Image 1 (cartoon, rainbow, N blue to C red):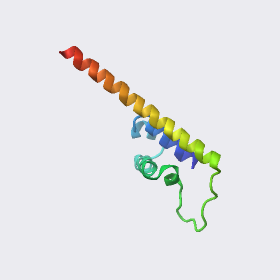
Image 2: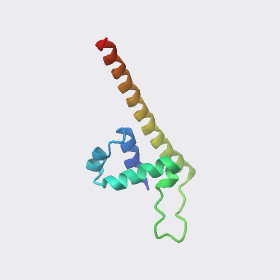
Image 3: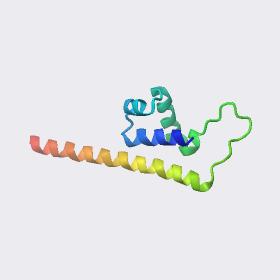
Image 4: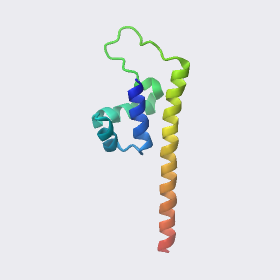
Length: 98
């Protein structure tokens, strides 16, 4: 579970650069893409592997759940910051062209 959180967090922080994430973590594109989509749809709970489990997984403590959510939110903030920086540079280039 924590590995998935780390991989999704990294991918989001890298502006969803799946190739870079694949190379770093040695996980397939499809798997990373799937985890990111599950996180975007269901949050941290979407990353829980429920295959073959008849009993529910031992739940994370509230502190662990909050830490995981915090890590992912920090990655999203970093991604948004990169997007803002990119838009600022684009705006600057457009002003120079005029």
